[in-house]
Length: 339
Length: 295
Image 1 (cartoon, rainbow over the protein chains, first blue to last red):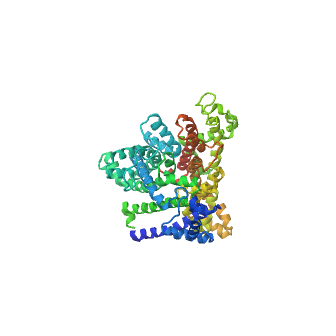
Image 2 (cartoon, chains in turn green, purple):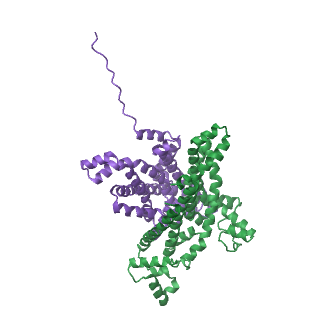
Image 3 (tube, chains in turn brown, purple):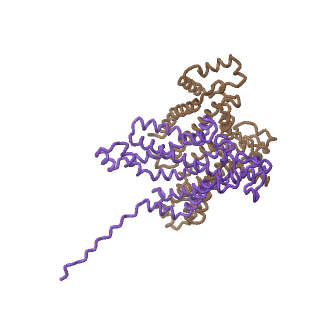
């Protein structure tokens, strides 16, 4: 099958998955008897019979649950996920407002993980079994073992409270309003508008949460780079390159690394999707106004439309990145492309 | 003429079993053994908590509130004057069993579901695997959060949420394993002899698929404990006054003057999870045929 055909099929498959996911979420959120009107409307409109009637009609609340589910699907297809109980805004609007912050944090974390993880992974592979290799293993395992809500507090304690080197929680200095909204990514927007004060402040605010969130990905990238490079280094063409008398440095960095990067790049795709949804705890600690914190608050407040909306968003992001990863395999590896 | 000739029979030694070889690899792996030591240490702390803890973890003594670490209170005291050290010690009685229960449940139920789906196939397989796909489409914490929220905050509900979220990973793994073993001759032989399907599945197939499943369980224990602590930290797991580590970290959040409130329970989580991850990594190296052939 051609790549385009394959892609098309994969994208089509998202639709039944979304239906399945919403069904599961719908069952979960309707397992507990609550008055759904309380969830859909705010307290004030609850006393307004007109609003109550129109909401009952719109969401089909007088109808049996299966019909209500179909109505939810219909509203979803029209881009309506209901109104958040907490923020009183349409969930779709909320998600659009909060997503850029999460994306910015995820990008920062990925960058941190790459800058440290690639060299560490390469070193670990080249010095296989030696001290550096063992250190890299311990660093990765510690990264995977640290509770982010705790390590976040610890780095804030040291770098913000004790040393005062970096700012505390938040996305930007509380005296600043943030750059003019273009993409929603503060760093990009402040560069576009030459707002260097905002740029500097948001960059400083991004450092600690990126390190905390990125640590887990750092572990992943280090391990993948190591094992992939080790595998490539044992191949025949590397032996040839060495036999030609090339310097080890050239062999590793130019001949081996290029092929060893294929799994790393694909893992990065999955890691990025993981970072967006994994930001939940980090965003909570750093008061980061992203979708993760939005979901936590929705969960605490039993804000069902918001819970369903965010969970669905995370699942869709996950699926899209899965597809992107599959495509990237084909793009980077001609052997797969030709199949 | 000598009639008696000595006949030397070849010495037949039972060949070394792969299990024993793997076990040997595991026990000589220093990091894995360090991990095991940490786990055993915390297990002893959990069992012997009443003997180790100098104070009642629930006893409030307002006069002594928010004291820093001292000889009387090794890890200091919290806002209600409770001894943080005693609470950390008792916390082991919550996190360890919960991690164990979730992993064992997910492993047993998940593998049984996945293995039967792989063995019987058909519409049952299709339905089960679609359900697993849907559950796996979410990062585990996202779905656990939603379920725990709907069920209401309590340790028991967090436990249920975790079980609901974790089983499909094992189902998928077990299903794949069964599919790869199912066509072996000994299975066909058992079928011909007339052994009932379920018995073939549980007596003949499952034992041969258990290696990778156990490896996964060993690697998972740490992340389960971490996720439960995270749920409690958010307020959707253990509720006060339960001395759960995640909830304790949450109590001390942003109280930087009282750094001991977060530091010690957090270190407890870190060491337990690190123990499981060290051990799990060693188990994988020893039992996963894909990694232990590589130098």
